[in-house]
Image (cartoon, rainbow, N blue to C red; front, side, top):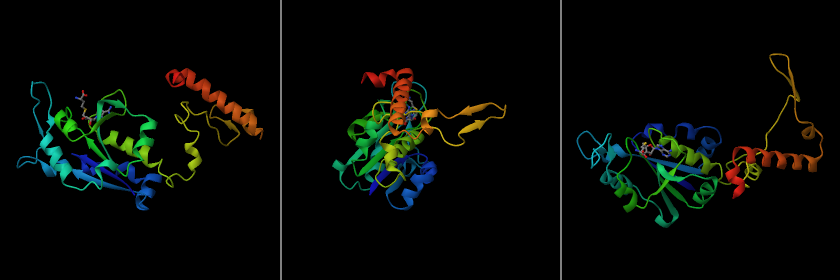
Length: 232
Ligand code: SAH
């Protein structure tokens, strides 16, 4: 079973959104498991503090390496070679769908969520965390970033998605964005009494034409929104 360990100063935030829909169902069915470790349990003083001022000065606080190490040593990772250690940080490598496919090949993940100005770099280096960012913006903490990574991974685990074939043609699977989707009603009359029809080809029943139309739309959209994907 795929196991996710989370090191956080806010354990109440989990499972949170990870407990709903297909992920929540898979969690109940033991298709994955979640172990949440409270960094404050390993605080260094009577107030269970986990952070100190940055050396060299500057605003904010930094999570201490000794606290992270103690939290990490408080539970057993089955096999460290089968476990990926990830620190979520805006200064890390940008997360890609291909990374998620790589992570689920491991049997376990350890995700370190930062807060304040981040985590002492020695903890990252010595404890072998790789640094991963979920995008070019700065959040207040690593918890939502960790949830993004976990959600992306879990839906890829065989048996979690109701329709596994969804994974074959979705965005990024072929370095393309997905084609636009349509459903009923075939003619939608909006509140201003304007009619909007579904593209004719999709209701034609002609599978080859539908395939070609989708491929073209996929290409068109990717060229416009994410030309960097096509260059790959
Ligand atoms: N001083 C840091 C930002 C700290 S933000 C810097 O300038 O790089 C506080 C915490 O939020 C980080 O330790 C990290 O765990 C999390 N975080 C913020 N933005 C993130 C992002 N884009 N991706 C992943 N984690 C992020």
